[in-house]
Amino acid sequence: MTVESTAARKPRRSAGSKAGNTGTTGTEAAGTTGTKRTTRGTRAAGKGTDPQLVQLLTPEGKRVKNAEFDPYVAGVTPDELRGLYRDMVLTRRFDAEATALQRQGELGLWASLLGQEAAQIGSGRATREDDYVFPTYREHGVAWCRGVDPTNLLGMFRGVNNGGWDPGSNNFHLYTIVIGSQALHATGYAMGVAMDGADSAVLAYFGDGASSQGDVMEAFNFAAVYNAPVVFFCQNNQWAISESNEKQTRVPLYRRAEGFGFPGVRVDGNDVLASLAVTRWALERARRGEGPALVEAYTYRMGAHTTSDDPSRYRHDDERIAWEAKDPILRLRRHLEASHHADEGFFAELETESEALGKRVREVVRAMPDPDRLALFEHAYADGHALVDEERAQFVAYQASFADTEAEGV
Image 1 (cartoon, rainbow, N blue to C red):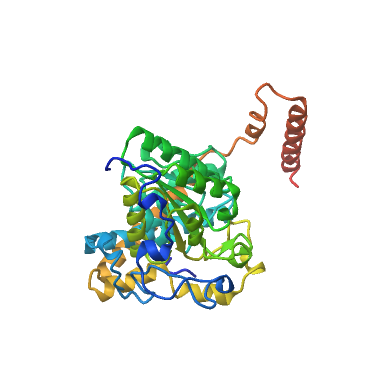
Image 2: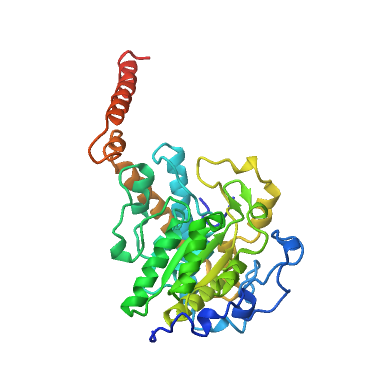
């Protein structure tokens, strides 16, 4: 298959320090140039005047200069650019294989990251080993960057474990299914990091839909008041399941940070170089003791919310087609080719590697045991419960009825 197609501390300052209490917006903090900030009447993406957007690579792969953020990627070598491309391609290949396995009945559910590879790989590669990451359930690319074996992500979606990896081994927390709760977990962890005097930072991921949750707002407030070294990374993929941005917010999401007293920046989430630069900026200021920041990665969910969703019921194909032209993998490939940083041999070798990854994922998943169907009754109550016992018995009888049918040859 073609993997590129969509259809690639210093001592901490107090909470009253200069950077932690300025209340700057993404425009002021980032120092970007362009159109003025969006007003209430131009809140919808692509309608009216767009807010400031940090972009270093255009959809055509052309490098764009940015005085504020260029220094954060000035040392990126051609080899590292090829590495970012490889990360995105292999992440997309893994994601496609997981989607196929769910359709074949091997997984109970899957949340695809298709289209969001640049936001995840760029931000993931911005972290240091001693940073700590709190994901949602779609951060497969970030998991890849943190060294988590991709096959370990699939056990939970198959129902054979509750996570699949040791969070302490990679400083990458288990996937969080409860929408938005990990923002509070990340803030509390970051407060502990500051109290310990460490110079590491914490990175918390969530989506545009989760930004409407009270947990996220509470996390913003605690992080600001306690000057916590946490970066909130919102992947705005335009749709909270079937709810568009227009039904979620009156202002661009990055401007929500303004009300809590810390900077927010909107970055082109389909631009891996810009995502890398902006996240490095946010993490470095957090490590210096300058407090939290909000990064809004403006991207698009090319596929369904999960494999149980049908996006054709609530959005039009022309919207998806327009975003396909901004494909993050194709964008970097164009830049690599135009800059003569990669040749056909590199792309062919990567295609072979991606197919090998897909094969390994299939083999590992199909070798996993079937889920224990009765396990869901085991830990509902610590000391057992008569109603749970009754439901277990009913479920056992229901399962047994299929065995009777098979024995009769029906």
